Image (cartoon, rainbow, N blue to C red; front, side, top):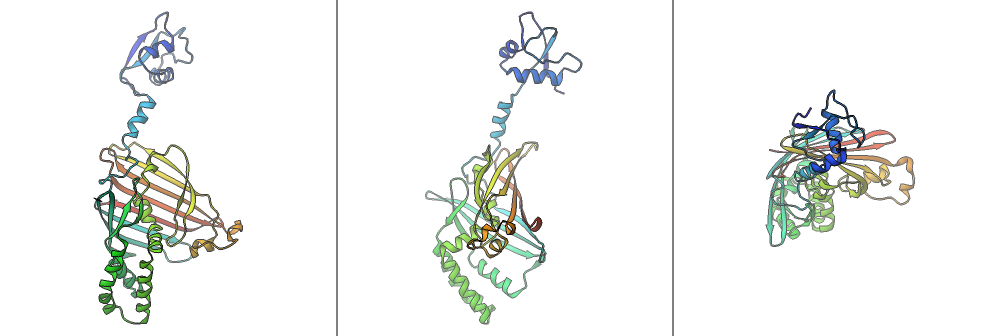
Length: 342
């Protein structure tokens, strides 16, 4: 119960509206304040104060509108700023799949955010990758990792609202791989390795294809969110990738906030799939003609992303996300990420 109030003796010419006007709050707020704190005193129900001896008047009152304005100031701005990200995050990524082995990946991602001319550039470097708590020892997995490591750091242009929008100096990626390919070939020999290296070089040389591959990774979608999400007041529609190397699907999103923590604001972004997509299309990563007319074979999907941002610095401290895929009312795949500032 709030005790910081004054007991106002009701005068003959008083009514609820006139008292509220004198202390510059709404009639509704005054009535609610009195009724929440009056104990055994008479409650207020109508504007007329006939029979009411005292009205409790708050000394320090913040209206709902003022509270919303104060809370708004705790959120990150809708435009990207250089200190939004920290330099390093630890990532735990879990895949729970109904028809195959569950997988857990742990790694770190280093970020170097800078301004170059009129662009904001994000250099990214993934390192210390483990699978199910073990260093990758499978030959193809190790080769794939070595190929990606040869490209790091990978640089992206960041849009005004914080999303990655394109590679920065894409040709430098090809040059870096070609410079390190001989070293990789010295360790990974044989026809299979050579074919993989040829395909990898071909794929990274296609800027549109390779950027879509990186963009479709949930990691980059949630680590570089559209900062306008934090200020959304109503539902909206937006495309989102729920499968790497696939195509984006339309979701209906909504944002909720919790301001209960003294240091961090918790922003939850929830999305529900609106678009028809069959399981075959989801797994194949491409649309199939007439496939989405078969509603019985369509998947259902939900996304939930929780952001924890500091209420003073507005910096991103932690992300927890979950993408759930259902097929014929059974959970087919659950993909979870936890991204934490070290």
